[in-house]
Amino acid sequence: RHWLDAVGYADSFGGKLEADHMRPYAWRYRDYVIRAFNGDRPYDRFLVEQLAGDELVDYENAKRISQEIYENLVATGFMRMAPDSTSEREVAFISDRLDVIADQIDVFSTVVLGLTVKCARCHDHKYDPIPQRDYYRLAAIFKGAFDENDWLKPVGGTEKRYKFGIRRLNIVTDEDKTEDKRLQVLINTVQHRVNVEAERLRKTLPEKEKKLARDKLIAHLLKSNKSFKAFADPLLKQVKELESQRPPAQAIQALWDRGTPSPTYILIRGDHDNPGRPVSPGVPAVLSDPEKPFVIRPPWKGATQTGRRLALARWVVDPDHPLTSRVMVNRIWKHHFGRGLVVSVGNFGQTGSDPTHPKLLDWLAGEFVAGGWSVKAMHRLMMLSTTYRQVSSSTNPDSGPNESQQKDPLNEWYSRMPLKRMEAELVRDTALWVADRLDNSQFGPADPVSVRKDGLVTAKPVRGGWRRSVYLRQRRKEFPTFLSTFDLPSMTPNCIQRPESTVATQALFLMNNATIDQLATSFAERVEREAGTEIDRQIQRAHLVAFSRRPRKAELEIGRDALGQLLQHWTRHLETEAKAGRKSSGPPANQRALASYCHALLNSAAFLYID
Image 1 (cartoon, one colour):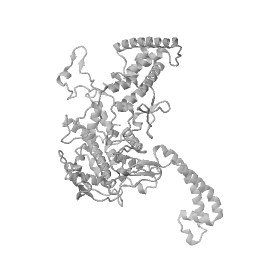
Image 2: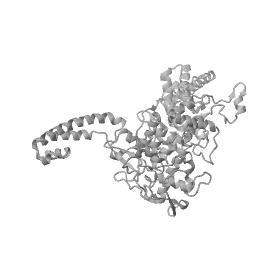
Image 3: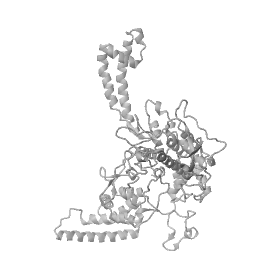
């Protein structure tokens, strides 16, 4: 999810107009990212695939699109995540196209390089040594795919909006491989019988016709030989039926190089009507190594692609690159410790923060590269450290503030673990898991959300549960209320660092929202199912499920008192309802009391915060 934030992932195009059309195939990129991180794909390979996956494989001449080719193409969805409303005629001018390209360059520079270069679109960067010339040299690298003078036309059919490149390919994915292989064996077997008979009859043909290619030979025999036609027609019909059973073609959202683009000019003050001198593709000079010149070569012999993005990708993953590894390990550190070693995660420039621990950052970056760019190994290295395994408390209940609070009041030296509130998706997913309503199925199209009459944006349960929040539909202008309440960021064009707030609406949401109430009831049912009806066991089980620990002595006593008072409350309530002649169809008082207690646990700081 953090990577999807950084690249600006959304299931809709966004852009300048109110209309927020859906990106129907963006979810394939989301699934690619999840599979890549789950499989610990080396970060250097991960970046190369996203920047230039189409230039890694000759997919245009491939007879079949393998899983590898498919993933390389889907990975380029990284370069398609910027807001884009050029599907609408009102905002489909060259200036609008240049805005889309500028947003995508901004995403690349902040995510991969940790630099802000967008102001160099109009003038030399005011603080960092990035002249306007370098900005347009960088833009020229992407121009093989993003050419404002050669924007792709709308795709016909049901999808009439502009798309840079939705290609319908005959793809064999992991899920389809077994079935596809079985069908191919059957097709080959049947086709082989036709081929053998055709080759046998070839010998009986005139000399001129003996040299026909097999496909033409079969077509000729079907017309001229009745016995062959009677033999082959049923078999060829069977082949056609088997072919129709192949998995359907899948549509993907990808980027691909279209060959030599139009020239790139420095635009005076960023105005496309005021071009200056032309520039060639290149990278920022301040990051270049004179001993390793930036060289662009075709991806393979005879390729029509420019190879520009592939050259850029190989440049950024060079082990000696000054920023790539540092930016990534700093991002990982930030998500574990609440702030980065460079606090401005997407800005390592002059206006960003200085590293608080520069030697530690350098060492982690070196370990990252030496460890094969393994993200999981870096997680392990950080999480097994003494620094990470500290508690967040800086006071002792008996003696007051401890030594770390006195010597390091702002925790600048990590003398204790920062206390962190769970992020929006974690709050929702953990509540679903605690209530035993989490559907663990992965991948596939985004789960729909709907806007209720009261304005809340909610997701309905599927098969009795909800999937993880990463699979919820994420529109740029319509946010699920649960997630937006807990600081789900907007993608404009991306989000490098999420905002963090503690406001009254969060507590009010947890107290009053009907979905939370429903989850609390399911949580109570789970506790009773797993612990029985004995109160102490219920309290212990509820704490273990919600907080991953057993209750302390004081918490156990508070729980007993709370359940006793809640039982009395609900008993009186049901008696009042009965006296008024209103029959209650709900659960008995003891189950309602347990549900209220579980609701309180879901509202507690112990549930929301990670110690």
